[in-house]
Length: 90
Image (tube, rainbow, N blue to C red):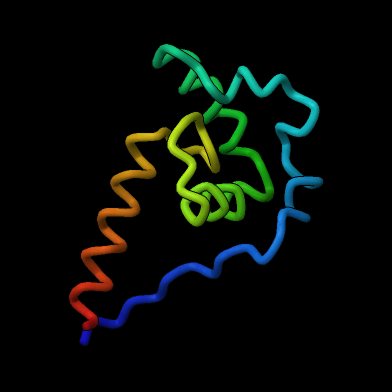
């Protein structure tokens, strides 16, 4: 059995109060072009709760926008990899 450590899932959304994007227009995190995705990811790169944000989006299967510095495509890839790891463990 592979040695795999899955991240802890956030219990609640209290981490949102510490988010760097707090007070920013939500539209900035739901861009329609790659330049907007890159700008959102830059803000997330310096956020103290980016990990919690990403886990929240993954847990709740949020399909749109940039969460925790990851685009929709990047989050789908993370979920596929996690499912593959879990299949190996069974």
